[in-house]
Length: 197
Image 1: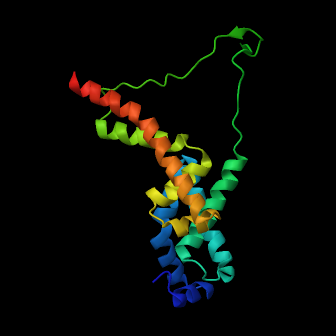
Image 2: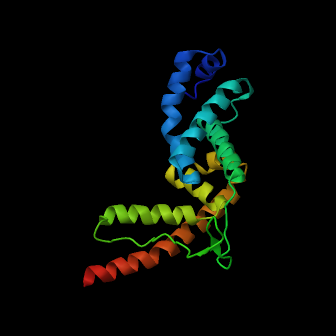
Image 3: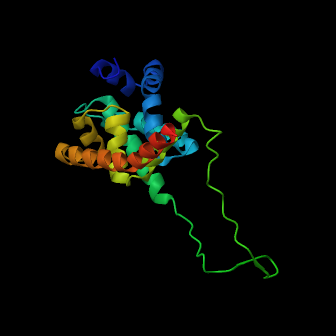
């Protein structure tokens, strides 16, 4: 129903029920896309809201050349890109001393990123490892992987959302899958060795 031309006309007419259906049908996928690309639930919620606000404001420009869902993904992807461009990673030189208000040198505090393996269930740990591996992909590879393999878009839809050729999508998807396999293989080998002990 949401890709039916009559449904799109209802959206253009400002039909509140049609808008509610559109939001209900597409929210989960758009949120998941934004979450995977930003890594932050609050940012993903903002992208979700921005996507629907932008879509409903500009529905008159939707030409129907692609599916409505693909058009929404494109809007969400652009919103994510804008957010990522605005992020400025604050870096601090480890060579520069840290001083308190009086100018007295202070030791640097570093977060302890080690995990207590007894606290984590194996499935949760594997899920985290996969999320970390996906997050470590470059933005170009991560976008293709999330749209194609996580959200289940076709190659053609992914190409439309990202403004790429289908060949470029296939190439990037292959590179993303190979990178993930490489990142996760060391973890899986270590896990298998622990299981044998």
